[in-house]
Amino acid sequence: MSAQRPAELPRFPLAQWIYEHRHLPHDLGQSGMHGELRSLAGLLRDAPPATPEELRALFARQQRVPVERMFLTHGATEANTLVLLHLARTGRPRGPRRARFEWPEYPPLRDAAKLVGLRPVSAGTPAEIAILSNPSNPEGRLRSAEEVRRFAAGAEHLLVDETFREFTDAAPLRERPGPRLWRTGSLTKAYGADELRVGFVVAPTGEEERFQSTHWLIDGVPAASASAAVALLSHQSTVLAETRRLFQRNLAALRDAEPDAPQLAAPLWFDRVGGPQGGDRLAHRAARHGVLVCPGSFFGDPSGVRVSLTRSDFPESLAAYLGVRQGSPSPMRPGAARRRRTG
Ligand SMILES: Cc1ncc(COP(=O)(O)O)c(C=O)c1O
Image (cartoon, rainbow, N blue to C red; front, side, top):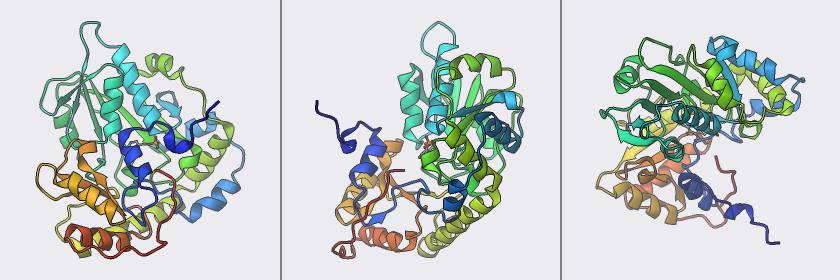
């Protein structure tokens, strides 16, 4: 029997791009905080036992929703996919339902929507479902409640992926009259806790019972993950303080180098370099010079590249990236390659 090696397992295209370049010395591609937070190690090692129900109750308290509306998942990817599956199968029987996006946007949201039979359409087009990440991946932009409302106008449902929300103290989006609000989140970004595989869905008021029948599909979160997640959330202020310190330090380095960079609410910057394929060409050139950034075409906008501000060596990697962008790359140091997990 020929077992596939991990490198050969299928991944979604953006993750594949990151994974294929994980040996590069300057990593501005990973959007996760895995391995960056010192406060995590002790917390996870010494986590007292806790049940998934306790974790669910804690998430519900922190998100200020009744526990019946809180559903645990193995991360935001699963949370988004479950919500989309639910909306696709509970829709009207006539024709595919439409899902509205504004580009650039995090590609698995669109890919999952297509996979469950929804038809992606662009902002401003009539649609039953409106979908966005907020703050957005790849732009790090936080839309106000009013902007979100305008984007979702006329839809029946609104899915907001808030995976990056806790890099600042922005409040979760609140339910309002209009489209029914589904929110998702994860411990893989601001909490840097990839290995726990814990995320959640907040279902809209009145949809919790129907969603139960879709959520039933997934296996429960293991007790070990629940225990570690409860420990992490119980020390939320310590962990998030470390995350935000790193983010703010990296943001200051970006502002020093690029005073015109937009206001960011998440460690993601979409650098529009111009030209219809300018971003993709730059990402390939950067990779040849030891710098990993993500081509904008993955996000539906090939004119730019996504630069992540999550790593502690960001200032040095940013300088290397800007060198490539300006046409004067710094020479690659021999043996500078490193190994990191794909985030
Ligand atoms: C907007 C957004 N949602 C979801 C995810 C994936 O989250 P998880 O690792 O919890 O599945 C990512 C990862 O980059 C993301 O950027």
